Length: 156
Image 1 (cartoon, rainbow, N blue to C red):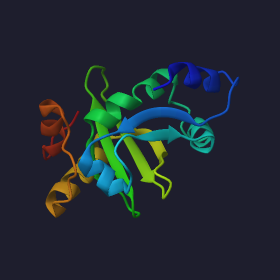
Image 2: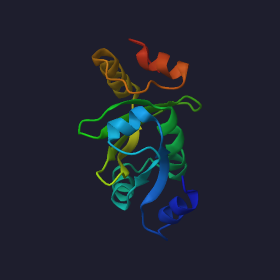
Image 3: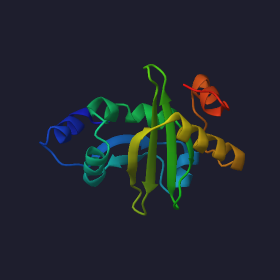
Image 4: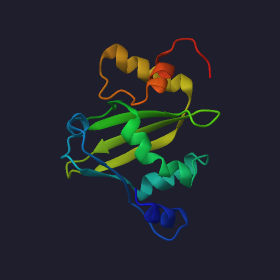
């Protein structure tokens, strides 16, 4: 992630888009309909939409985007060439759950279309549904989070 560009946007000095990640995983590039190494962008529109709708998200949260995208659980999105990423950060109490949606374009670009915090209940619902339907593109990289999302009836 380009922290300087993100900091400039956050301070109102510069407009987006902000480069947040590059996708190399073959299963994800196929799902997004892009070439390997495509850049994931946070557009000015999405940055501003998130700023107004999700005031709880701060600069440090945006800095977690690479970790979220590289470690999170991934399933197909609702539209063609889109994916959903669910990630949990267990290092803080209360735990933070994230939901990120990405959309690939015909020009080999990828845009973040949604970035917000989620709740354990919603994360579990999405996780279990994808496993039940066998549409998981990539499971979460961390075993404790896979266990937490897969548990039935547990509360955090």
